[in-house]
Every structure is written in C-alpha cells, then in structure tokens.
Amino acid sequence: MSHVFHCPPTLVIDGGARHEAAQHLVRLGSRRPLVVTDAGVVRLGAIDELLSELRAAGLEPVVFADVQPDPTDQNVAAGLAQLRSASCDALVAMGGGSPIDTAKAIGALATNAAPLAQYAGYHKIPNPGLPLLAIPTTAGTGSEATKVTVITDTTRDVKMMILSAHLVPTVALVDFELTLTMPAALTAAVGVDTLTHGIEAYVSRKAFGLTDALALSCIELCGRHLHTACREPGNRAAREGMMLAACQGGLAFANSSVCLVHGMSRPIGAMFHVPHGLSNAILLPTVTRFSWPASVQRYARIARILEFARLESNDNDAARMLADGLDRWNDDLRLPPLSRCPGIDRERFLASLPRMAEAALASGSPQNNPRVPTADEIVELYRQAWVTKHEN
Ligand SMILES: [Zn+2]
Image (tube, rainbow, N blue to C red; front, side):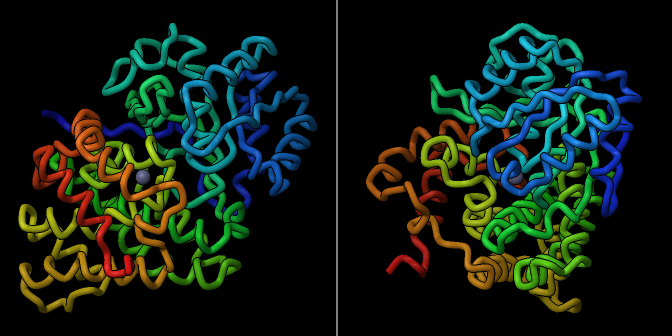
C-alpha cells in the first residue's frame, strides 16, 4: 500500500495567528461564516475578539455555540440547521476538539446527504465540504490538522470515527496564546492525549517516514514541555512547545493512525463520558505494557526520548521501562485513575466490558496496534486499567 499524506493546505503556526481569520475567510470568498464553538470558549472572551475582527472586515458571522463535550449527531444536526437557515457559506471552528470535530461534520453534511452514520469509517464521504477554518484553543487533539472527526451516534451510544480527506480544514490557525489560560487539569489530560497521538502514530502498523518524523518530534516536545505547562500556566515557551506538539501529533496520527489506546478509549467516552484526553491518559500505560514486545525498538526509542531509560540501555530493558514511566507521569500530573473518574461506577463498567471490547474492535484502530488483541484480551486490558494502585 502506498503512503498518502493529507494536511491543511494553509497552516499558520504562531503567537497571534488567530488575528488572521478574517483575511483567510475573505480570500476564500466567504461573506457569512458560521462560527462553531462552545460555552467554555465563549466565556474566555476569544469569541468576542474573533467576531469583532470578522465584522471589521465586512463579514457577517453567525454563532453556533451549542457544542457539548463528546459532540453528538444532535449537535451536528442543530448546527447544520443554523447554517442552512442563515445561508452560511463557510465555517470557523474555535475551541478544543469538540467544536472543531462538530464543524467538520456540519461542513461535510452541508454538501453530502445525511445521515452522518453512513460516513463512519474510512474515506466514505463523496463530496468536499464547505471551507473550514480551524482555530484550536487547547493543545490538544490536533483536530485542526487532521482528516478525522469523532461524533457520538446517540441512537447507539457509539463514538463514530469518520476519516476522509474531505474533513481536512482548509486553514488552521495554530496560536498558542489561546492556551495560556487553560487550567492545569485540562492541560495535563489533553497533553497526555497529545503524547498518545505521538506514540500511537509512531508504533502504528501504518507508520512511515513522514509520520515518524512528526511523531518523534511530538513525543520529544511533550517530554520537554508538558510538566512545565501544567506547573506554570503562563510559561509561553512551554505553551508554544505543547501547541506545536499537538499539531505535529495530529498530522502524524491522521496519516499513520491511532491504535489500541484510542480504540479502547472511545467506548469509555461514549458510555461514561470520561473526557477523551483523560481516558487515553489512563489507558496509555496499561496498553503500552501489553504492546511493547511486538515493537521493541520503537518503544525503546520512545522510552529514551522521554528519559525513562538511559541512552545506553538495551532495547528490551528500555522498552520495558516505558509503561512504568508513563504511570509515574500520570501520578505527577495528578490524573485520576479510572475508578475515580466521575460518572463511572464499577458494576456498570464491568457489565459493559464485552460490548466495549466489541465497539473498540469495530472502530478499526486496534488492528493498527503492533500487537493486535482479541476481544477477550481487550476485556482483560480494561480490567487492568481499572485496577490501579490508587484504588484503595
Ligand atoms: Zn486523541
């Protein structure tokens, strides 16, 4: 199979890049963009700044702010209805992964027949969507750089993974200044999600030279900057480093793939509404412990980059140390274990495991893992991720 690399045709990465939104929309011929965001971003004030800059350039922006965390097909339908009733001609997504993913789906359904569920999976969207300008406010999902959207199908309680070149944003404005006010807990969870993107893109069976370079740089930047960004929210160098890491992670995994961590994480999000970054962070050490023997050199390289293993250690020793190091990171970053996440109780979790394992396998992501698990092995991994040293 030949390797294909998709990325936004225009990607601006710099402090202050958000101020370029109006000029790109004008260039794309937009007059009435739909600004897709959520209540949290509106509270930050960044939306007011964006709207006044768009209006100053003669545009007539319309705001859709009803995106919830773990966005649903209903959020997409409501946004699409607003886009049509206001005759909008482009989309601007400002926020974390949820508003950006929602805007991608709205843009696709503007030019392709509903329902969205028929496009779940790989490359099933026939027509290009409306122009989309993505402005991330977390570092992050990397959604601004990817051809992937994840939307919950509320009739089945399943997170649909939809991948298509038609979902790549037309313009990404990657501005770390928007992350300077992110709280420490969110910084930690989305930061470990970024690290997970780098690791999964690098160990994936679909990895190749271009994705390797981005994935390794993403991992190194996380190692250098994540703890500082959590401890010192206003540290510009750390925020800039994590924003670059998130963007590189997105570019890497969208063209390589995510693997077992993301495959197992989505059912936890769909059923228990544990935030994406947090459930990935919790699963990462357990899945790494299961996976490393199938790709020893690559896991060893990651362990050395993160300084969990000495440079001169042999590959087996280095790779074996990675999972313990990731456990320590979660402790240092004060990420709670699965058993302490709000909304997830033990009985319902255990009863749901077979169905969650099935949903994980159906997403296709676990099949890209260096070690491909059976459904029974996934159930066992969920159990291991629950039982941590924090539980008592
Ligand atoms: Zn992720």
